[in-house]
Image (cartoon, rainbow, N blue to C red):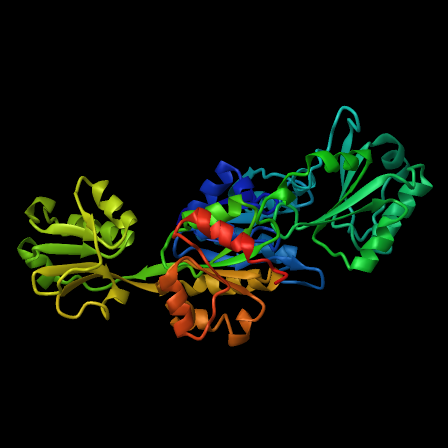
Length: 483
């Protein structure tokens, strides 16, 4: 068996748009991914189906996997011939222990690559409106680990050099030792009035900031119970935030939105909400289970007068089936239809004209193409079931972890089908007990999804006036969390 290869990838600080192109390509081709707590789990949506996902994040009070175990896993999986990604928050070369992992791989003769990521120490301040250098405020910048257990749990540093020689200092994970940090800087010449800002969950919509000075910040942190993960930035440059704070001004900043999805791919709706500043959790992830080929249907394809495609996926799967079975598309003489504009577009991209409709007379001249969920809707016509769509349970523990760290304040139902899935899909129902919706704003994309919610005893808090992203964003904005 040939040896595999390991990619030591920086995931960036949180916003999934900040991962590098090379890092994303590594995820898309991975067979095994070992990921940390600070790597945004949403990046795992780009992993191929069947990819083995291993959580090895470290929490403050416990270690899911010790570093030695992580090193061994990387070696073992590579020696099995697997393509392995080690996904680490921020940049793996900045307090990411990537050197230790690379040494272990090199000692075992395993091929590896290091893929840099955007460091949290620079990205989090920018998302808080603070560049780490500026000609007016500072031309030197240092990053410092603040949770090193060198002496009594406090970092051993050249405090004199930091206080007198560095304009801007970024301390990683410095909340616990903040009183000691502030005291050490002031004792070594830094002015007590030096501005300080703490940035928690930087680049996420749940980003929080707390400003003070070296003399006041420790007390403020204790009062507000501010906690890690956080970057502590010290320096006069913090004052520029008043002018150029941009991220926190987005209209959906701070919103944690749960988006029910019934398709395989991340939706354009999720992207639109993210662009307006929200954190969006799409659920669940779906996968296809194979179904036997219905040769009785394929043998009489040419005899149908109408063919209705129920989704974009049904179009893709239908043509994949024709290719596999060596059936010439020119043998079809039926009129083609789609249930949505996207479905019709998918047909048109293949050079086939189609109309949008959901009202066709169901008889033996009609063929309906779709996954197993359409079977109960169409009784008096032929069905070509192209796949069985099931929840990918590999991602359920990941979703639980996301929900634990960022409780949603809103849930968006883009269709009646998404409502039905939320209340009836066994794997999904288990994640969301009845009390989950207490205090959560329920937003519906249109009247059909609202009626579906009412059927299950849920009153919506907002309905988009039109089924568009713009109208939905406006509806979410109007649904204040203070109501």
